[in-house]
Image (cartoon, rainbow, N blue to C red):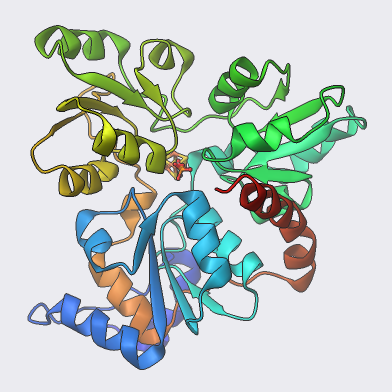
Length: 334
Ligand code: 13P
Ligand code: SF4
């Protein structure tokens, strides 16, 4: 068994505290105890494993999680999500300690847009406003004028004068969808999410043939050929609300499969079918999100490690684009 000190020294390489957890422990009980003792709040994204969702204080989409992180009175923010989300929480509430069960929980979309490359690209278009999807690194946020999430993206784009050219980064699929719904012609960075690019239109059509009443609901990070056949397109929260309100009883869900846990809880009598990927792997589960486990969550709360640390400069410069987004969202009542 490793000691805390050796685990701590390996933290950078491993990304999490690699310590053994007593298998007889009731992790739910232990985590709840730690929550009280430390005045901690657990914020979880819909794409987390269901056991993490079940112990969270708040489960939501990227915007909801950012809003919760900004307004929490807890002393310790435990972020059950991916790195860019925890960074955003830290930027919004720099006085609080923010911890993430596994620092390696990254995001293929955020990685597809390295800040130094983007800085060079941006230099070529000095008159453009830069709008970045929140799924990007803190360093990219420093180079961004306004951030957005899938919930507020249309409002953010519409808030920019029509004659102002825009660069949209990093998601080309969300960007193309936004160009369609806003009538803009934004310049798109060539990034994408590995999970939302994996869905097979052919297999979805086959499922539709077998379930003719099933509605296809899709996240706008999906490719255009999937969005074209969708009955509803929206953020994770929007998809969840849609399944609750819709009189339909069967849904094909084209986003990360973790959200189905909340859909099924909210509508126990409805059927949810995870949209199938091109191959036979579990690729509709985000490998980054799923790096967090209940054991890592427990260890991270117990030792308050790994912690999200950002320089004052990155926090100060990076949060400007997030503050703008929060302001526009609040005005739009989101
Ligand atoms: P939302 O949380 O805005 O629905 O986005 C989904 C996502 O891909 C998060 O990584
Ligand atoms: Fe990133 Fe895609 Fe995973 Fe969301 S689902 S965290 S966009 S890789």
